[in-house]
Image 1 (tube, rainbow, N blue to C red):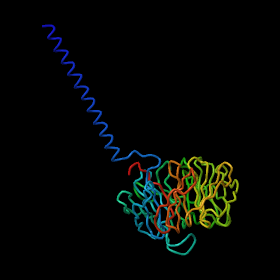
Image 2 (cartoon, rainbow, N blue to C red):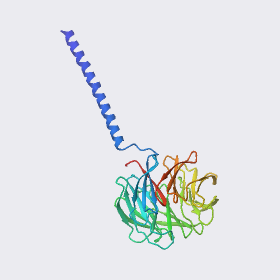
Image 3 (cartoon, helix red, strand yellow):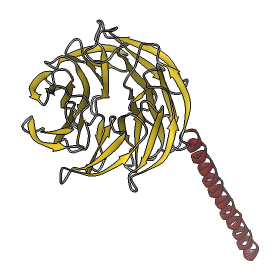
Image 4 (cartoon, one colour):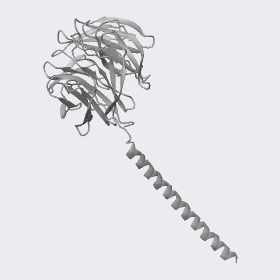
Length: 359
């Protein structure tokens, strides 16, 4: 009897272990399936995934580009005359295009007063933020710490501050100069710098206290602006001669001036802080400035009339908008050669990268 009982107990334990093993296997399979399903719905982002956004001034559209495939997915009308620049929301869901007007800086024309909000999933304009007065809004940057959108306003000598959740204007910060055109913000979100075109100056601003810290003379005319990842240097190119002004952010003064092969325009540093890439529309070229030696390291040819430069988050490629050629040149930053050309719209200019996190 005792033997039969022990045999029965042994059989029950074997069955129980089998059931437990099958249950654990089922849970593992279901877990893997669920993870695969979730990842399929929301791909895990990496530094090279996302959407490239391009403002086409003449077409009055925003190109939504698949940078991996190298093709335009859609050209969305921005519903205004016309957008020059674009900022992508940190969650990758929306693009924000200031509607500038139908002329160039300081020239007669219409005076824009709105910012178009474009949903990147539906590829439609879903809202328009009124800046409450004619402003000629231009450069747009999301604050790195507060998530607010900062937009330069040329006619009112200010930076307009937008709450992107409420989609409304919430503040205005003076720049102290006319034609405040482009904007950069320090990585801690505490300071802003604007390039003031006709004034030929850079404004340094304390964003927290909404206070103008300094107006830095550079030239008779400036244009674009850039800041290094470590916030040590701000750059702008003299528009009257081939020279780059290097501003020390600790003193808010020009530290040095670097000769360039041609007049510079759009510029941006690589994400490792080693090089500054500078577009030269007059010679259809792109310079690599070594930020350690402060000397131009190399110059390469690009399609006609390069405007703006964007560095991919993984620091492996640069995207250059080429106005007259209606193209984006994709530069391999290791080989420093054009990897591909992407067809977009007429007057390609402003660029932004929309993260794939929530797309």
